[in-house]
Image (cartoon, each protein chain N blue to C red):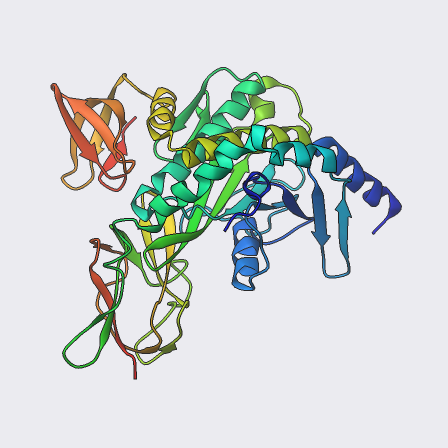
Length: 160
Length: 254
């Protein structure tokens, strides 16, 4: 990195009002941090200015922690011991990240908890759906690019 | 969870600037996979070599001329079925930025394209990860055309083409981040109806008779956009009757 580029970077930060900027390329990593104004932080944290918002945050999060959708997305045991991954929302089901890329998962694949298994798209927002169960994909229950309903089973999983 | 809520809410408190990258949404997504990102981190680049639009569409941007960045946020308070609000706050942040920079004719082409006069000036690509039926992360990708003078993409425009002046990218970025934070806070405090009212106010073709096509029946009709539903569907009034459309069900005709 040239000295001029470093200078430009510092200018960028000072003009931007940002606290910290990281640049990474294959050759180098550089991290530039402005002096954070400790005084100002203290003021913000004082009860007179921050108590009300701080107190309300947990309440707001609690509301979100129990959305109507939380329950039905949970895996459900079928008679044969298989589990289902269900759609947490209404939308369009996609098996791959892009039309020309490989499916996230296919029949026979072993999947782990937290692994992305599909995308459900709603109103042009793209949702990567993570599996809550580990196991083997037995069946893909929905065709690529099809509409799915809330709580509709998407995959059949053998948890064994 | 938030020991320091004021700090932790700031979108752009940490910025990773890359001289070039394939797509800022991809970079954020990769960093999230490696568990390397904190709430509010923004990845910005001068040169997006494989900018993404909706599902395989490309985003065209000349190096160094435009804003292309992605913000990683954790809207854990937002139920998954209210995620359209992320489109609302992103759209409004861009609209307000353009108005601040003295553009006059700015509108939101439903659901998520920003127009200046008759040209598309900005696009939004939001990608979420959903765990246990909840939004775990949201990646808000924004492409805003600033100083670019010519576009291969038909119908695209830029701040420069609209105003005849060039802008400091840093300035535009800062203004945009400011508005994005403000509207994100509105969302946190549940000011949904106000957000919705503003979004509706800036809707392109609001209250103007237009020709639409129902893509399911190919039926053409004249109607008037009157707003959007809670989940972001378009409300179109025809013969005093309001009908609701998903974006795949309706097309705008010339």
